[in-house]
Image (tube, rainbow, N blue to C red):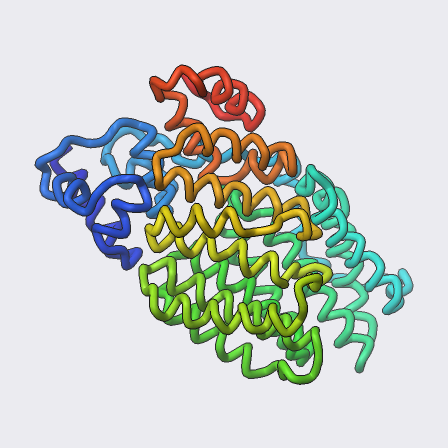
Length: 400
């Protein structure tokens, strides 16, 4: 495939990645990437090809190979059984009025709070929230149309949170267009509510949308900092937590493109916010706090290709204090990614199994977890062979 290298270079430069960064993210050197792009090396085998597709966010392998259409999502992602129902709920427009009484502010708050509890407290969190999102979305949309003034503003703020839950659900699903839709609708609801707190949270989730869409990191940082200026960290924990969360968003954006100095400068601001909030603080649904800031240091080091630093950061985090099974599982997977950079396959398998025990659905739909299992299935290490096959069955990955 003489054009493979050209396609790879196109997608790499579109993402703003250097050869060194791309190589590090797939466990290879900058020289290896150069050799592929210039045609000195042949197309890699499927596991590595899938890792390239994941890093470059290429959904169809034909966009890289130029040959038969093999969707990367069919191998590295699986669709949740409730995805069609969520898609219908998000794309149904209620154009007629309703005689049903609007929800009270208390009812709205209680039902949204229950949704967050399902997301963070249920090991099978996607299945949990999928049961409530369609009715919750329809009922709060209806309430927004029926009430006025401060009641409407509160309903819009709650509606933004429902869209956040929906965005979290559709993330890591073969439904990128729904990720964009939910992020945009949440921001629109937050702005209509004229609520700085809601806008700040929507900006955090829009940062994830921008990353998935390959938007340049400057736009992500600008959005985060614009929203951060709307909140007042000195006013109390709600403002300080949101301000710190947005600093963390900027840090992650810089780390993703290899800007180490800027990444750690913003991480230090998030760290200061967490310190001021206290070691025992964790926001009720954003989960921002000491544990989250420390855990994202693992992600940042991994994105910056600092495998040793990422592993050391992983040994310092206390996930037990994080009140979210979903987040504990995610950060265990990120710790596995740190060990993967060090080629420590036994640790990778151990941590992925721990992540599955914390939250099966987090592990099942995580891109790194699925692609790592595919790669490890080809390992000649007999010590992990049976564990990898067992893990593959648990998370629904097809391996030889």
